[in-house]
Image (cartoon, rainbow, N blue to C red):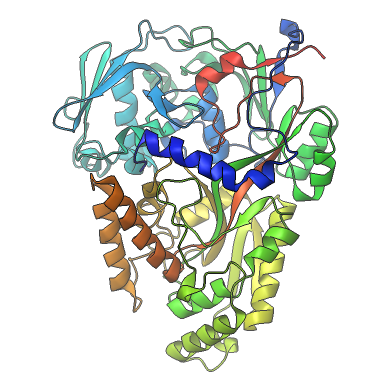
Length: 574
C-alpha cells in the first residue's frame, strides 16, 4: 500500500509546488497563529462540517468504515495502534513504540501505559486483538477488513469462516501492554495499512451489550479517541465532548459539532450566517469565499481523484474500444476550467500527483497524452467497437445511464457537460441519474461480479495511505472488493490481458526493491488507463473556508486531523 515514510515526505513538496499556482492568494495549509486572547471555556465550541453531501454517516463502526464522512466521525472517537501525523508519516498512537522482527513478519507493539476507554475501563492488548479479530469475523460482513488487514497471517481464513479466530495464532498478547502481529508476507506498507480505521479499538463490553447497535450508545463509552459522543441524532448531527480519559493531549474545545448537510451550497450559506465555522465551498460561491477577509478561504491540494467507472460485465462496456471512445470524447481541460473554475487538475492518471509512483510520462487511452481528449479518434474507436458487437449504429446499443452522487451543483454541472460531449462527439445519449451518496455506495458494492449490477457511475477516491498499491491493487487486483468494475473477472476478449496486469500488481505489492516496484506500478497503471479501468477526470484541491478565530487547525493532503492535533485547536475570543 504505501512504500515508505521517506518517499512521501520528499514527493509531497513536489506536489505542492505543482499546485502552487492554486495557492496564490488563498492562504496556506499551516495552522493559524495568534497572540489574541483565548475564548472562555463556554465559547470553545466548534461547528465543523467535515464532509458535506450526506444526510447522515453510513456507519460509526470502525470495522465497517468505507467512506470519508463516516471516517471523519470515527477518527474523533476511536484510535488504533498507529496513525499518520500531519506530514503523513506513520507514528505510534495507542502504541508507545513498535518494532519489526528479523524475519520481517513479526511486529511487536508496546502500548502506552494506563490506557482507558472513555468510560474509564482499562484498555489492554486484549482489546486491541479483539477489535482486529472482530473486524475480520465473517458475521460482521465488513468489506474493508479483508483489504486493509489482509497482510495479517490467516486473516483470509478467518474472514472466510474456515477458522474461528486468529487470536493466539497471528494476534498475540504476551502481556497486557504488548501486542504481537504476525504478517503473512513481507510488505513495506504493513504499518500504512494498519493505520486504516478498520483496525481501531472498540470496547468489547459495549459490543456484547448492544450487538450491531452499539454505535447508537457511544454516549455510554466505547471509544478511546480525543472525543466522546454526547449525542448522535441520525439525519442531523453528532455532538462530541472531550474524552476525559484520553491518553494524548487533551482537546481545548469543550464541544465539537459535526452537522450533516446533503447539499454543500446549504452548508456554505450556514457558514455565511455564522452557523458553521468550517465547510467546503461550491464553485458557484468561490468568488464570495475568496473575498472573505483574514484568509478564510483555503485551497488545499489533495490526494483525491474524481473518476467514472464502467462495469465490464454490462454491455456496452465489456468492449474496450467503446470504453476508450467514451474516455477520449471528454475534454477534461474544459471541465476543469468551466465547471471547477481551475480549482482542480484535469488528469488521465490513476495514481495522482504527490504519490510515490506518480508517472509524469503516462498517456491516456490509445496513446493520447492530452487531457483535452481526441474526438476524431473517439469516433473511430466507437465505430470499431460497434462493428465488433455486430451493431450497425449507436441506436442498437443498450441504454446507458451514469449514476453519480447527488447534492453537489458542481458535479451536476460536470455530468451535464460530459453527457453533452458524448452526445456531440459520439452521437450517444446518456441518462444522468443523481443518487444519494450512501445508496450509491451500496449499489456499487452490489456491482461486484454482477452482470445485472450498476452499469456506469461516478465516484472519488481519497488516498488511504500514500502508496500506489492503494490506487492499483486495491482497486483492480484479483479478488479485490473495490474491483466493482470487474476488471479481470469477466468474459471479454481482453480478460486474459487484464489478468496478467493483476498478476503484475500482486508481484509489485511484495517487491522489496523500491525502484523496480514503482516501475512495475507505472507499467500496470499505463495498461489500466489504456483499458479504461477508471475514466479519471480531475485531481482535487479542496476549497474550504475557516473562521479566523479557529486556531491550530492544520490541513493536509488527505483531509486527516491526527488525534493529538486536537490538543492544539481552540477558539480565539472574537
